[in-house]
Image 1 (tube, rainbow, N blue to C red):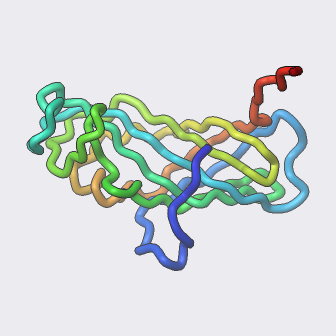
Image 2: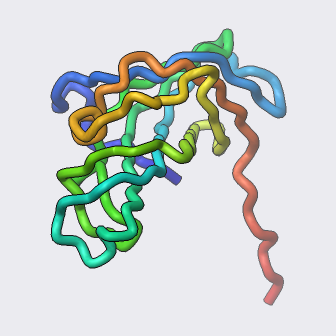
Length: 161
């Protein structure tokens, strides 16, 4: 479950918008529904920070946003860099200076608490091949055209006592 940081009015300007369509295993919602989304990017490059695992060159960058899905299935979300720092090594060390070589993968994790639904998303055509350190740190990716699919949250059955 993902929870976006503070109210949108209390945050700096967003430089990235997710925009696209959605699919539901059941029918579309009757009206707009709201939730959250986290975008996680995996990549590698040269990390100049003094991190124990910097030499491996792997990083994870995270961005959060408030998600809105209209009754017609169109979704949008403004993304913000995850706090305390959007980019870290897999060991959790905050990385601030990276010569980005490549984005290896992207995971999109939406959640709609009012419908108790979670899902997954994917980018439609962007490859994010020109990402640099400034873009990673500031979350400046422009509009990312995305599709998302939702299903009810799977909960384990209750155990009788």
